[in-house]
Image 1 (spheres, rainbow, N blue to C red):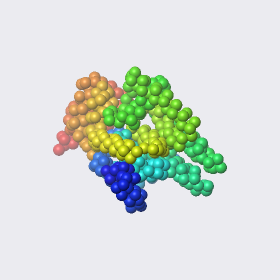
Image 2 (cartoon, rainbow, N blue to C red):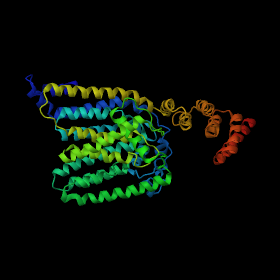
Image 3 (cartoon, rainbow, N blue to C red):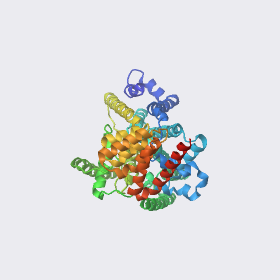
Image 4 (cartoon, helix red, strand yellow):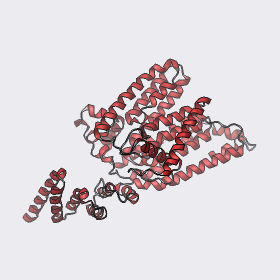
Length: 501
């Protein structure tokens, strides 16, 4: 890797620079760069193959999802529209179905698929950056920055983020063919661009506005081809709005202006200062710091777009790509989950591709070397931060312990930590019971934890205490009365069995 960086300094020097440049541009070394990138991803994320599922959507998407566990029992309409998830993502669910059919629900397989998709995503980003910049060392360093960025950790390490990986991969493939179509008079590449943007939207509607960007920038004689994909986006948007409203997912309680500032500030921090990544699952009070960062950033972005449009600079298209793939998560829509690192994957790709299109002429070899060295240092620092962040996702206990340290006053987080001890490969009801008791003691909200405490107590074989707890549950929480009665019957049967024995 150091050899690749130094090449930018030596390529024009008297120390055999011509031969070095020729070797660097050779097909053999081009393959080596892809292999190095893949090896880097494997070294960074290979340990995720030993990770478990998380009690945070992995049950909804995989473990308790009838579409995955018993696809024959689910109507075709639900396979295509996935209404239980709030938006149609049949491509993502199809990958889970295939994995389950071939390998069962071994988390190793699901994590391996995420790593493989991420390798393909990084390789494709490198290809695009190289095609745009025509500078191997610059594109390789940008690919390293992209692959090592800490916002990727959540996306790669969490099985439920498969949708973000697939949507990003297909969106970049679509971008690749759209660029080719601009230089090709035939419609073959346009059709492929449309096909892959549809696959991206059906993986996750992150790229739902991308067809409109393509429609605007398409060659005049080909624009009609992109009208269909834009209409498709409108249909998916309508379906998503209906499902999200029905599920109550459009439930952020903060006003629009606060929500927008929240989103912009925290995602700026995630992309440009990713060295203190806190979990962002809960509404927070708007601070002066967030206002002073977000508002100037929005103004600067508007001025930059106007300037680049006036200059007709090639980076404008990639900045708009970043903008349209971020807009669905920007706070315009009141999503119940406001902040997620996975929301930043495609916007980050667009920003880095915009940077790859910037050509600065007249730089000396010393400046080139210094810039390459700084880029390598940035990639290294990001790698170190990502390496520290990855273990948080090894299982639910690790994740919710980390989150609880930052949100000790949240009943939901405390309960999720207890649930993690009862989830997937873990089954430690005694530890779960201790967590629920701690939650009740510190948060003074016994009814909220009562069902979980009673179930954990039952599985801890303390039937007498469990029986009292289920009677309390039946009296205090009418919605859980049926669950309480079912467990009380099980306790009675267990006691009868003990007497007979």
